[in-house]
Picture 1 (cartoon, rainbow, N blue to C red):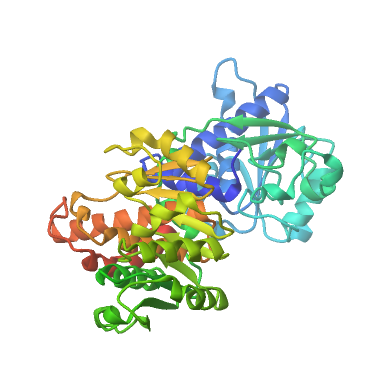
Picture 2: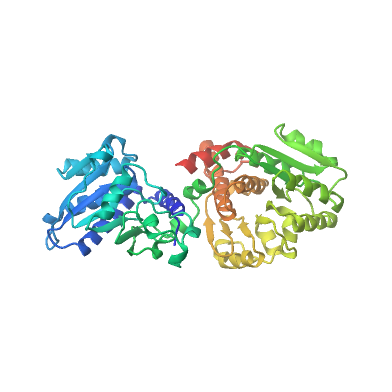
Amino acid sequence: MITGERMAAVDANAAALGVTQAQLMESSGNAVARTVRDVAPDGATVAVVAGRGNNGGDGFVAARFLDGTENVADEPTFDVTTLLLGRADRIGTEIARRNWDALVAADADAREVTDSATFSLPDADVVVDAMLGTGVSGDLREPAATAAEAIADAPATVISVDVPSGFDANDPGEHSSDPDENESDDARNPVDADHVVTFHDTKPGLEALDAEVTVADIGIPAAAERYVGPGDVSLAEPADRSGRAYVIGGGPYTGAPALAAQAALRAGMELSFVAAPDAVASQIQGYAEDLIVQPYAGEHLTTDEVDGLLESAEGYDNVVVFGPGLGRAEESLEAAREFLSAYTGLAVVDAEALAVVPEIETDATLVCTPNRGELALMGGPETDDLRESAGDIESVAADLGHVVLAKGVDDVITDGERTRVCRVGVPGMAVGGTGDLLAGITAALLEDAEPFEAACAAAYVNGRVGERLAERWGHGDGLGITASDLLTEIPGVLWGEGDG
């Protein structure tokens, strides 16, 4: 089962793998046409009611396949009319427009409905509902509202494309297997669909409808779900600039917390604070004037500072990054135990602080970002190939009850139930500091996105940043890159590729 939002991400990942949206639309429309052939007798009349988006494009393709069957031996023939809700010059996507143009060029009966008052559903044996897909839900607006009412009142067999128009496929919690706990069937199925041809995987709540659901394989490769891609970025990219990162680290090392804090800013945080020992605070501040450094007494973190750090972290709804540059002093590790045990907000745990995570119970939401060595210290496998050990890493995450983003040549991201692999990046990113960037990016995305999705997107952004910089420098391996070089590439990947 897959939500509509996740399905859109998988489509984008498939396109990145070379399976274009045009190919998927062709397969989707063909699947709808096959269902029409299954339910309609030879010579039946078919009305395709299409919107101006890609759901409508699927309908255009279905109409083309059905309209052309008179030239195919042993195939039934149909009388097909396609009604476009709106003007053709307002079709929203290029591939949908091309498929409309193909219908018109073939002299198909294809009509524009520019005013809901003029909508008239032809007498038809079968109506194909291709008005709205998984991207739009809720009360239907005109002219779709009038069209849906007409479709529901018609005596025809109704086939919906992907989901019934207006159906909410994005929130599994909206649907229950107990019909008594759901909205009325009319609210969830306003066109009164008899059949639903959904694509790739079923959508939440379809099983509760009084309709026959067919799941059509449209050629999306398994890799589009298994591997993190640009579609995952679209699920997590911040919509506006808000949120505060609160980096707790530094002591023996100063660059790590500064890099994490700067990466959080580049990935959309409004403010980025660093809480660090007074002995190194001025050094950290010296890396970037954009940071707000909050010093505390001493040379490293101790338990004396925990209450104050908790007050700052909880009081301002910060997303915490705990661990960069922290060091291995036992007092610092004990402070990490106390802080993380008491904290109730969102946190990315990195570096030396990761070692305490298996020992604690917490109400906090944690994303843990270990490298291979840190993963082993947390009870994970000792391996150079994280992808080959993905099942073991998933078990570690399940035992911990937290998301794990294991960093390696290929990153593995898992919440103990779902597991994905991120295989972007260049060898030059083995340089120190890129993991600190990853922690900061993850924190920024964690402000708005669900933890697993934030971690997947952060891994992709971090790796693609390295690839893009290496491409620009003309050195595919990225040798010579430093972590600070990568900072300026973060926005371009996060918003550029996420929107694409």
